Length: 452
Image 1 (spheres, rainbow, N blue to C red):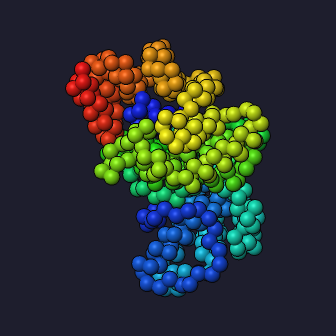
Image 2: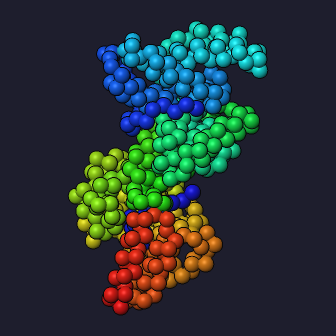
Image 3: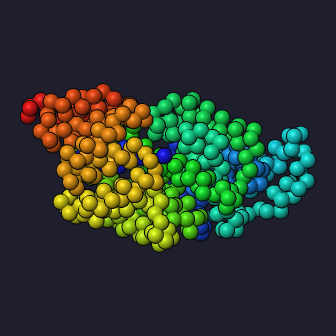
């Protein structure tokens, strides 16, 4: 799914749950840890451990029991055990290994109670009993990669893929996912339950797809991660222009995937795109929450570390692509043009136009054409951009897309056609579901009336 760049587009701006917890960077906790005494302190430690270890724990269990839903239930059982025992005993020196051991023992108990799995008891029980520690690093990475492809399987709806990925890989609770996407907790829970049932009913194998289908399956994975990022970067609904926590979740997933699949150029392309776009976050919103458009942003507030990381990932994607750039790498190259311009006037809009032309040939997407119209207007004048925009205005997929009248209003305003621009901004304001964006568009409509 191709997403738009909300910063410069028209210059208008895109189970038993563990306890809610702060978002932590993914990684394996190593070395001894002093026992954490006291309820509140221990609970904070458990929350941090869960964020760090949950995905690895579920991935390792799913490899053993071949069922993502069952693996998550076993992991949750281990979490409950930690909540019960660690306040008294203290946090173990290797909490990940402790959780894995408890989960495996619960798996044995469950298998013994489940007649349907009786035939697996001897073989699987032996495997669980004889492996008391965490798997080797390479095996953990293999399990994580299997879990990524399983959670993002095309047999699931896009909404289910997003919810399941955030749940089993991002470590988010159903409540956190619901609040992030402004839907009810029951809706998210149902999506996750249906996703697990679909994986089980269709007997989706817990494996990395073979080379013949890897490309198509990887596309589904990248789509899910970028959808999560985009919802954080330009919220489709609600009162906030951005939801940074979702951007952080997507970035973490992207970085993990790049580590698991270091030779896939489009994985690095997506990471580059997200790193560079995320670098603008602090400059995109005013202290009171109003959107700040690309050309008005204080570029000194752009995060140069994220930009450097993004440019490094882009360089890696271009080298691996060997002259052939995929859609995410092309979008990252466009973002890099903005990142390299310390002043808006220095932006290479001609190069951006060329990159959008290449992207349009790959995607055949009206949204990409809409972005190309913006780039054309910046490189060659608003009349040129408006000409392309009018050619795609009748596309059915853009019928309810508020950025079409938003872009058109901006170009008409620049051409001095203020009354027409006002009507377009008002139409866009009526279409958007984001309160901050609606306010901005109505302010632009009012400005057209004042200056008309």
